[in-house]
Image 1 (cartoon, one colour):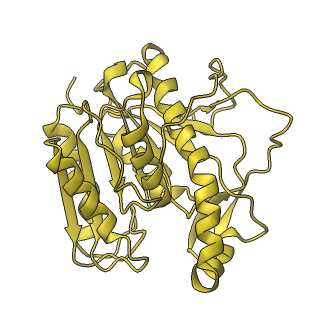
Image 2: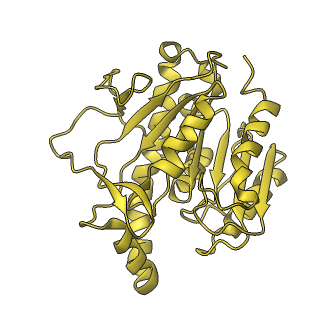
Amino acid sequence: MKALALPVLACLIVCAPLTPAQTVIPLYPASPSAPDTEKQYFSEAWHTNVVTNVTRPTLTVFKPTNGQNSGSAVIVCPGGGYMALSIDSEGNDVATYLAARGMTAFVLRYRLAPTDTEATKEFGDLWAHDRARLDAMIHQDLPLAVADGLAAVTYVRRHAAEFGVSPDRVGIMGFSAGGGVTTGVAFGYKPESRPAFVAPIYAGGEDFTKLTVPDDAPPMFLAAATDDNLGLAPISLALYRKWTLANKPAELHMYAKGSHGFGMRKQNIPTDHWIDRFAEWLELEGFLQK
């Protein structure tokens, strides 16, 4: 993945709140060439709520709910094969957990490949029967998603005072495809878009093996399952190896079971508690302390 130039960011525009604690911020000015085609529905294939056809990226804000703002922020990038966003288990639920621990969380709805009525079924069909076409779609759409990730970090850093956070305490995390976005940010940031930490969770995306770890690379937290049914566990191992060989701080949790996409789902196995290990790591790194 190559570092991508950031588009000019919009001024803060606050839309109608989803709840008293949340606002939605458009990441860029509305463009007539990018009509709003976004949809949200319950996917029978994935058994969860998903968002599809995002053409106008946004950040949904989850403010700290425990009365103690740590001054840290995190951008959460849900996964979904660059064709959908698993908006609850890999987005809103994660943000709610972290907000309860003093962080300001931003769920990023990044640009996705256009799909028909059932994106998750379409993804499954491509994965099973036309991997070359799926890979071509990912190759085309991933740079846009990474650009949105970089723009999100830049936006929150520039507006840090408005959210009561420090610009040097803004991190990014993501799941599966969102982990690919996070990895793209980890390798491709500029000074204004440097994240304070990165957390790719069972990350997917394109090959990064030939990329160089930045000299000022942030600390990295990784979690994945050995039995990942999409075969993505080696990506987390390779990222951990690349970071540690560059003498950068990293922590890896590789679970024996959990499959792909465990997110915040409860399966009564150790992956149910990966988010607690992440919170402990954030505490160790100082991001949950004022």
